Amino acid sequence: MAETEHTVVTRSNRGQWEVAVAERPDLSQSFSSREEAIDAGRTTADELGWRHIVEEAEPTGVITDPADE
View 1 (cartoon, rainbow, N blue to C red):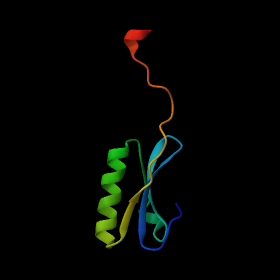
View 2: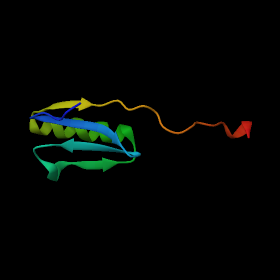
View 3: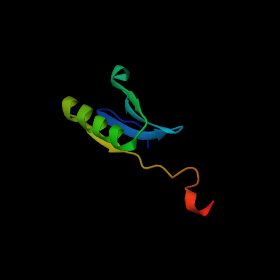
């Protein structure tokens, strides 16, 4: 999804979650957790009076159960 004017985008980027503010790069941030990024993106969008979009990402890696090893 392309970034558009007056939009804060939360998305996965190479293993981290980022909040991207196209017109205000000084407000862009990175987070290790999806939940933190979504909260920060929502807060930033609310403060600016802009729209917030969360881009869903495909899961990466393999989840294993240590008991199976």
